[in-house]
Length: 378
Image (cartoon, rainbow, N blue to C red; front, side):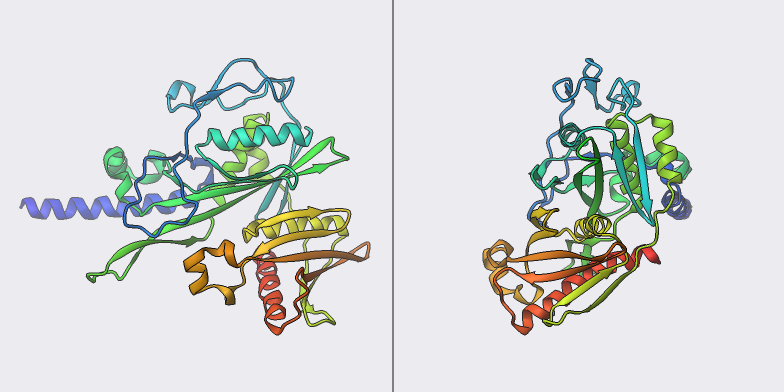
């Protein structure tokens, strides 16, 4: 009798949890983020930059901008302080733009101010910074585990009862990292802010055998999580909570972007955008964020991005022994405007290598760029 009751209880427990997770995936307004560092990762194949972030419970912002409330802002887990997210005493004017699933911010503050606040925002969320290059406007975090706090209304009655003790065993861990790209706008009087989420998930291998183990592999991004993080960034930069949430949910699409891949006369790949030069520059910057390209430098006047990349055909024994840094190659992405409504993007090997392997890689790389825009159009 006891075993039957236990079986019924287990089935009910599982069903409630599954329904709760499905409901949560369709309700982005209820997502809460809780990045933390007390996860141990023994006997795992861990990404090289998976680190344990340090929490900063409080800090002062008056050194960055004049319209700051002088009180200390606390991001502890105390419920009494849970809603204390808005930082700036004077609200900022923040315009949220959108194309498809892509959303970005236009902030009425100068890039230097937004840069400093953005760094502190990421640290306040529990991240350490892997890259922070002010010259190219890119901030990138290390991976940190996301232990989501899912509302009781989303997880089901039974799971909610035992969430505090059993939640960690429901799914294998997911680790996230973020990339913020900060671009000057309106002659440096305003700032555009682009936020990109990249995720990895721990998965089982050789299930049911003696070799069963867990490894980390890339995971499709959760747009709800990315939007929630953008919402929190809006609040941190001085946006009104209710207005920020409304903007996230109701942002209007920009004009459709058409991109074509073709062969240039030199045999390398070429992309053609139905956009002006400056709009293509923004689109390429976004696409490079999505595929986590290592941008070393960029020059808007020249219309160039300088990248350090690892070709897929070069990966293997040498990369495993010496790391991918040892086999990186330098490339240049060049934008040329053909008219006010069309821009061509060219792939250039900085080493002036014109081998068939380099040409093939140009098509592989631009193919990945093209996929990002095809996703948005679907």
